[in-house]
Image (tube, rainbow over all chains, first blue to last red; front, side, top):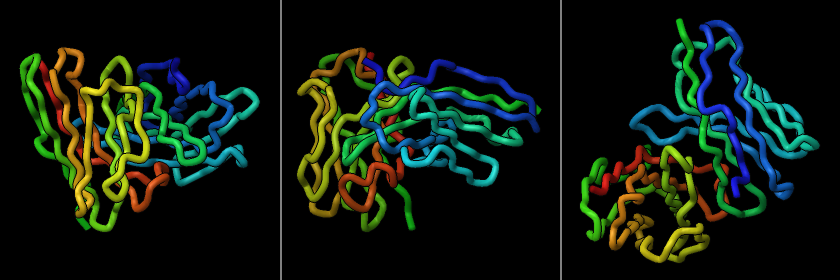
Length: 111
Length: 114
């Protein structure tokens, strides 16, 4: 049973445009959500997070939106840059439980 | 400050063998978690160690085990390897247990089972 789902395995976006990566979850206990970015041959690196008490968190070009009623979150990257090309993982947790990851979305930003 | 290091980076084993992977956390970090990444399943939590004690365990068979030493370094062992164990094994460290939101990942060990 997959508790965190990233339904798009891949996404291609032109440089300068907006990238929107989506994530759905099923466990209503989740109260903290994170996005990680992973380049080949490297471990995931933390990108941005959001608590369930918020509906938006912004950090530079990256914004995460949380819709609790729909159990949906999205990561917006504006403007997209070629260096953003990577695999993006959505993850969720509650309390002290381990992170539950989605399967990832491969973003390709085309110059 | 040095990051999380994992050794070896690449490993090829045959079915039935066993393997031991090593992880050195960031200096001062006491919690180490292990994850398995496969194309079909994404990142899946294996277990977490804190102060030499296993704090959390994922849904993996008993062939997967781990331990942590007094210097916080951790090892994971997989016995009786199966083809399906081929994966990238990632280690992540954090200051304290339960701080999964502040985990720092190593580059991983790529295990291929033939």
